[in-house]
Image 1: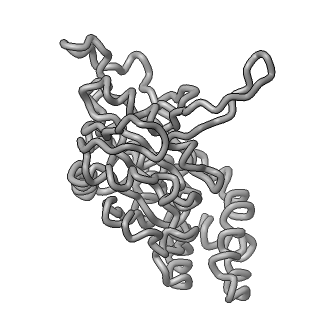
Image 2: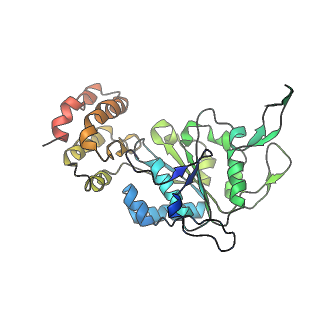
Image 3: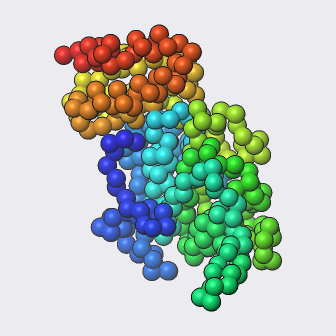
Length: 312
């Protein structure tokens, strides 16, 4: 979410950590620090989403073990995923970790595989090396609380190939299964939760593999203009003119999976930045969304809509 305050820290392995002052004591059995409680009302406050809907989404994640937040770019999916992850680990000794997938991500990167390793004498050996997910899972085995993996931009990777046999294990947690490489069976820890994000304009709308759809709960994240109104109620920016222009864009696009997200405008100092945001971020998006109607896109350029957005 653009302009949002960063409440957590990220280490070099992608683990998201709350500031030290916010930790909620120690686990009486393990002695590990407990994550701060992050109430669903706090998630609603920070994301502008309805708390009742967020509770249903949390229930879906708990029921399935994994979910995908999907929707058009700029509607705050990544930020929302991180906030839901913080809620899920709150009060326990678990942790959250974030990985960004891309076109070059492989099964060997994510699960495990044989990788070249050059020794000091110049010879090369091929040891079996654990991927990022197995490293995450092994750490989760050591915890009692939920551990949440945020998989960002899943649409950019060939997810079926990247997950491999994990697709089966997502449904049958606790069942040992040998992996493609190596002899030791792998068991997916029961305390692992996965929250993925997918952009509907970049391929999520096609649905990908139906096997994936059966394993994940699909949670649609759509642009909510009320989020803008609530956010700017405390910044002082008058949003009604902007909302009228965005409503016009919704009418023109007529496709919730290709809408213009509101995170462009969730900025504390929008009054000072709105012109550059519109010219350099919004207009390129509108050119793509309205590629078949260039005249309509031209009528939404800053010089045309400025007087509607900045009514004063």
